Image 1: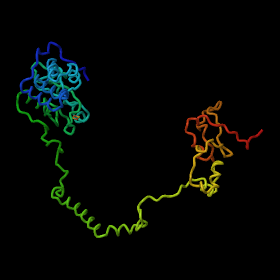
Image 2 (image 1 turned 60 degrees about the horizontal axis):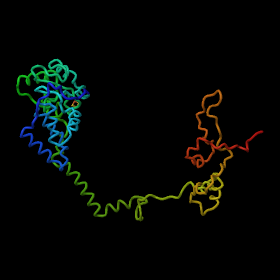
Image 3 (image 1 turned 120 degrees about the horizontal axis):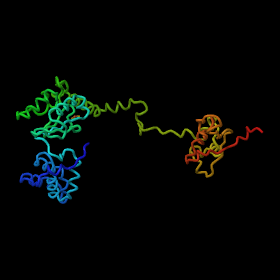
Image 4 (image 1 turned 180 degrees about the vertical axis):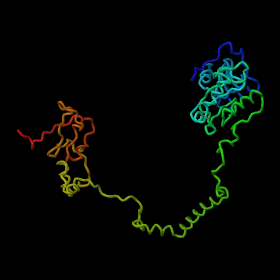
Length: 352
Ligand code: FES
């Protein structure tokens, strides 16, 4: 984006005063907001000042807006220089905002731009006759009718190099021009035949009637008890209080159950719990017991050098338990100490 700054001093008018009609407009805008919040009207008031000044905002107009809204001039300047809809330099009688965003480019905007450059010159340049000036802008929200331009307050869409040249000719000669689509399409309708929403049932009420009939039949069925009968026929749900609720089942992984299945409990605490039916489903955690029990497996954590001499790093984590280590132990540590594994010597398998 080009640097946005005020026009050179030689282009600045000596004064700016709102016309009586525009003064009334400013009062109307300010009245929309609570007392003391008149600054909220700034966009509308700047827009009106630009309109009165001939399509751009001279310094004096910005100062007049600041005075009218009881704002510091710099605050108004910030708004005027931020929004590209406010022109800070004079524009032609017909100010063309050319959309150069992707949908328009895909539909031939590059050719439209060539016409502008050939007939008017560079962007922001006003030829000696002052008729046109143009500026490339981002999407103007008429992508479905791309490519398009905005000239003063109106959109001109579905442009081709031919119809755009003619449009400029007509504007220059003062002839009436057609706003909107230049190929005669109605708003954003398809180019050719309109082939959606053509089903007469959408409009004669019969489609709505079918839906209504369905709901009425369902209501009738419920009244006559057919709905209840239908529910009775669902296996496992008929005649039971609470039918349809989730079925609660006992815990499936207690030490007692593991012992029953012939699995080895993971440590003495669990062995004790497994032998005591009164604690069978409590699932007491080891942290509640205080000290952390020693591993029970004859093969537990083993140390593995991360970088063996002369070899490549071993991808396996040094804390990876060997096969057979109960998951309860492997998942117990979550405090960062897992990076410093306990070294447990396998006494059973030690050789001298
Ligand atoms: S891209 Fe041109 S109007 Fe949206």
